[in-house]
Image 1 (cartoon, helix red, strand yellow):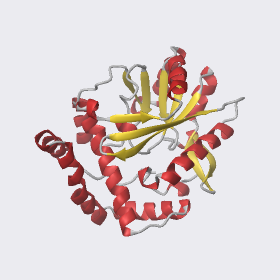
Image 2 (image 1 turned 45 degrees about the horizontal axis):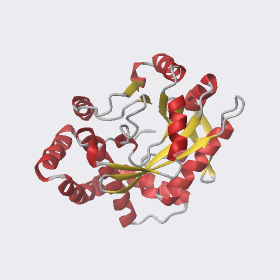
Image 3 (image 1 turned 120 degrees about the horizontal axis):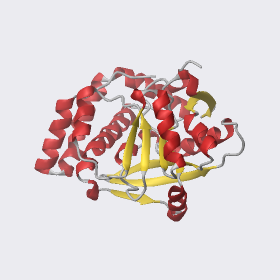
Image 4 (image 1 turned 180 degrees about the vertical axis):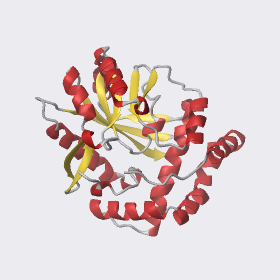
Length: 282
């Protein structure tokens, strides 16, 4: 379930140089020609997106394709620029922000997805201790650049899946038992044994059952969350508390799937799973 990676370390460094020289506005408009270049060369992504838009019942045109890739480019820029200028970013939390605060204070599992500005939002809740379980698919040079950048949120920790599933599982459980926040990608599992099929836009699709397992074992609440791109350096935070009764994962997973469906229907150009999502092996 991978796609050919695009981009390079030198291009990220160039974007940083231009940002510091000319400001964010220049980078924002620079993404138009950059996106046009990738429209021409990322043919595998186009095939996957054509299937994606057909499945969700939306038209797929050349402009839609360009618009989708441009959103991805902007969110990737924000992933890096927000590390050095987080104070320039706005994250609007919807009406029930106090509910989210209460749940996070007690410790919970945040259900992330490859949607919108999730990577730039790691510092949105700087008052809470948050550990994100993830396995980076970035090219080595790009990953090196990110590690060199300062992290404005001292309470943010990465649990690296490349160190082994046993290590990650022990760290994840420890985080929840300490009453902290554990964030995991629920829309993609890294290994087949962690997949659970649910109905998603009328078809069966594999989702990650691991975050639901950790919530069940530690009796911590589940919260689906999405960071919706609104405009330059501006995101809206949408969330929903997921009910979890008993030991079966399918019902809460299906509820999460409905949440993601609603978000994707309203903002189809912001879901960045650039592979054949509904055609993975069971």
